[in-house]
Length: 339
Image (cartoon, rainbow, N blue to C red; front, side, top):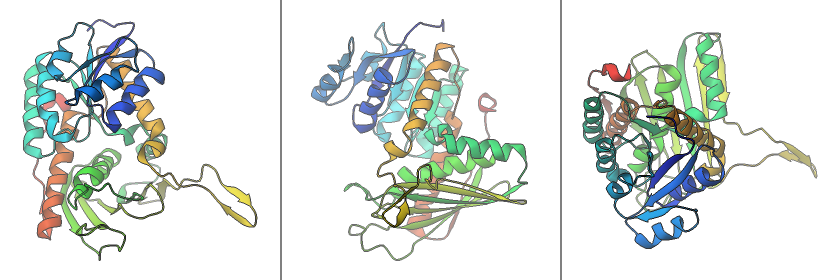
């Protein structure tokens, strides 16, 4: 693709995440403009498009992709709609940033993987934005130096103040722990081979029938263990923390001590209340990096393979949650396209 001065992006899905990306592309990042927005709710799409100069509202993703001023696609619709939208983007051979999950299950993710292979080149970057967070990036860089020795364990904590009313017990795995699945694979350079989910007594703050919190353990093909405390009704805020325990030391991120106050006989800081607050810089950097690479005709970042692997891990995690015990994960052979 010839580099354009300004990339025309179609944003598919104008809910909370999609609308935030529209704002980001329009007001924060450079090198791109929102040329189109798509939503099954025509009035919502029109309302979002009206806030951006030169933006057209659609209800059909394929119609938006066929528009002459659309050069790339950002998918922020619900996960079950992703497969069809991705396959349509492949028909137009358009580069895509797809919010996680790539698709909701391993079988559909594998179909997308196979379709992209038939194109013969990568088209998809998956929206695992933690890879673009400054703290996670520093942790990854430190591990890459080898100063701490071989990673042995990763301890993850993922807490939300309160869960949405539609949240189910399995969504703690598929919608939340999906991030830790990718972060574990990325930080360690390992594939996850098995998952176990332990279920403590639910918190009194959890809505009826919601198994919250949960304790998830990943085993990897590099011999490391990674555990995740997922607690989506902790009540006090949004926290994401990770500590890697290595042979010669440890490294931890997410303590949130960028600002500490001392006043009136107390010291302390603040706790983010929302993921868009905690990871605002990560989202900004992720979208800017995607825009820059797309304008160069390149595809970088988390791949369709990463989306497929995370889907397989989460699928196994849901089985472990529902049936108990340890569930092994079997991935297809990794294609050369993603080597």
